[in-house]
Length: 184
Image 1 (spheres, rainbow, N blue to C red):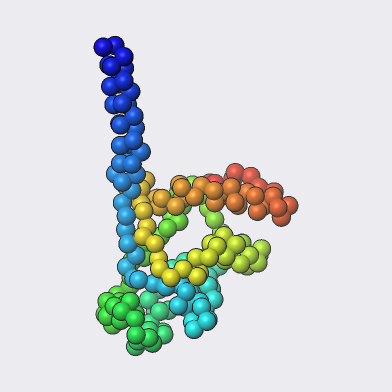
Image 2: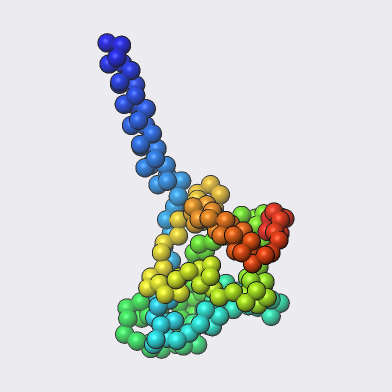
């Protein structure tokens, strides 16, 4: 009987751990879809031919503007350029009523982190793909998974490798770095 009790206890512990392993991420993270079915591939590929900085530009003060405003999109999409349902929906839901899409931000950094795109792109002359890899060739935007407690995107925590990638790149290029360079 004693062995049976230990086996039942062990089975209960393992079951609880498995349920936590599978269930906890579903409880803690909220999945939010992007407002528009956007394809970077269509815009940057052979037909589109656009560059990252055509949409993701810097403001006059040198800060990174990140996601483009509707006026940037409506310059080309005041009328349909193609025949896709996604473009038709975008024009009907956002361009025609002049309503700004509320984009989900994948890389909302913790408040104590500072990152300058200007330093890396204008000064270091890095290509966007150095850090963002093949995102510019993606055919669809992934949903954003946001931590319900902190409000930060899952990518910030799961891709902690980003900081390790930054440190490795700085070392490869003989740059010194200190915690306070990025962390306030």
